Amino acid sequence: MSTDVIAIMNLIGLLIGLAVMALTVYTATLARRAEYGVLKALGARNGQLYRAVLAQALLSVAIGLGVGVVFTLLLSVIISRLGLNLALEISAASLLKVSGVSLVIAAVSAVLPIRQIAGLDPAMVFRGK
Image (cartoon, rainbow, N blue to C red):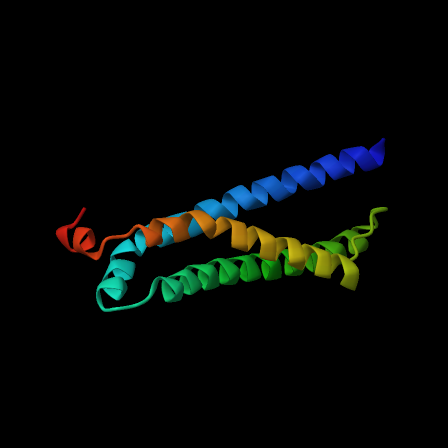
């Protein structure tokens, strides 16, 4: 029964991470909409713009993953010094698994902004709409 609860908590954590990441990438892309329009007007191909959005999503996820790992390591040191009966451990297998899921989250969260960029008309950006 306890493994079911942990599996449900992991799924909820995954969905929350996906929602936060999607919102972050979407907001950052909308904030740079004018720049993407200028790049498109200057002749940048859609593939180049897609790679820029995907790189932004990957960088955001990588920074978040790094902060999370550092936070967990610091928390494990603090908990061990408090004498609590709790062990926090980061294994190579779990780090690889979390990194893989993070890559999936980054890719999925970049889908909606990529669709926005695909339909972006450079003339509309210059008109201020």
